[in-house]
Length: 248
Image 1 (cartoon, rainbow, N blue to C red):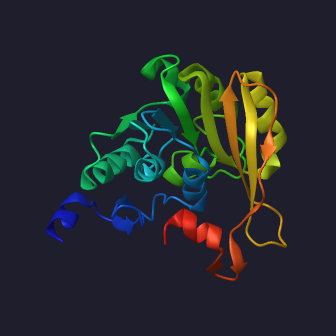
Image 2 (cartoon, helix red, strand yellow):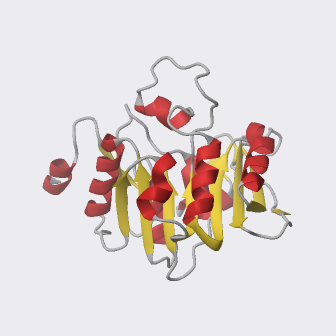
């Protein structure tokens, strides 16, 4: 417990990731990862020796989960908020992942300048879902920045991803279905061809509330729509698919 107490800052806690014995540091008063990040880590395919960049990594949940689940060579998280980036670095250190996972503080809008063009095999992102300033009270709060397009837009993400990906590199994103038309148009604008999509439903009889998308830089037109992913079979009871993705 002494090491845990030394690494945690006030208000923070360790959460078990159910993978490889890994834990992640989070502060519930700031922002905690949600199911969307976990589902993206299950949807994403990373092959042996591939280099992966997570845009807007927050507390580093996606790079850490992908390191646990795949045989990728290197995982980098880019995060603009220094407090979140610091938390992510401490999680990387706590799990002894420094040789494969690194966290960089920086702006998504400058990502291709930070890392160089055509430098990644895979890009992942769990971006802000809400458009612009709608409903905002404080644009500097961590939760606001994570949920609203205050510091970067969908266009910024696609533009930089197109520059960062190697030819035929893969792009993975989780988003909201209400923006699906805009997502597809923006992907096509930057020659990231939509290749695979899966809608996520909270219950079998409810509307989908998440969409998982795979794109291919300079890919040929043809998209596969996978079978729906249902989260709960009844109230508070996960389906077998969700249990498998979480690693319970």
